[in-house]
Image (cartoon, rainbow, N blue to C red):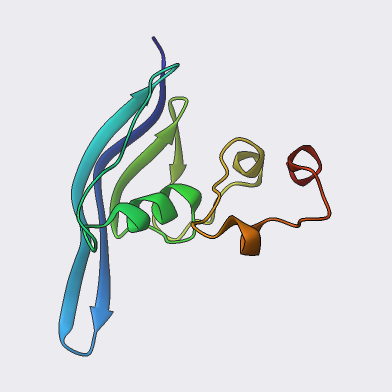
Length: 108
């Protein structure tokens, strides 16, 4: 099976008044075609930060994210436009994320 999404040595650190917060520190995984994958963990463990990194909402401090074998993010890069049609996310409150006057097909 082909690898669809691959994260290698992914890190995201945030600067705060109290110092550095290591929200994501050296995360590695891959998702293969037709594979079911679950990212689980306690509250505050970095699950949402990983999702935001994949979506390009945050840029990684270091590490690599590959989609279908192609590196999609490097430091100081924004999410490539072509990727917006390939990977999307529905936030925890879909009512505030989706336009109720449109079908999902129209939104995509």
